[in-house]
Image (cartoon, rainbow, N blue to C red; front, side, top):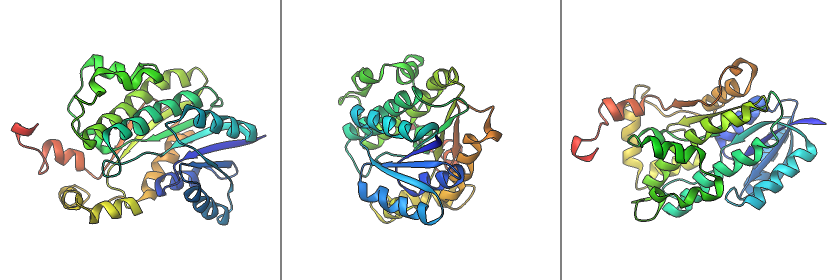
Length: 279
């Protein structure tokens, strides 16, 4: 039986992590769009990786369970890279909550049932989760521990409380890091680890579209005033992902790693800081 790394979301960030942690293992590449998964699989196969492809809708328990079963038939699931999601420019608040919040909780639950001892996972969250004002202790606990099938019924996630897609996205990404912290307890009982990475603006085809789109001016401003003064690259996220999933990250679990070139610092304490009236 082979060791298996499951990559959900065939984008550049997920591929960058998979290239670093999938050597000598079988990579199960899952994406909502079969064509995306096959294109990414070809790139990895041409670079010497052993890859199989599965279509999955992360907001469907049946789909996610089938993915778990498919991966488990290949071998022991020792790694999970969850990089699937939708952005504020792509979807309604309801869809963002269903895919990014519920879908992530579902993936964590299902793979937490099979993750192998000494296994590890990373969930790709976002810097946006760090720009949401502090939630109450009760809200934090609810996002972290509410049973998956009850998650979208929380009162503060209802339509009258979620004002727009960006708000839904920020709540979802904050929820991802909280959920991972709680799941780290359960994964730890299996001898496994799970963490989140919250990237800033990372240059991918999607990011390039955003930079040219209606929100592009805001994104360019973030880059200009950040300490790094540039966007990030998928390979930089891949380096951190490899640390968190490898032996050098053996003491790290239940943690969230913000890597945004200083954009969040500029938002709270620098030139991006909103006026007090809008905080």
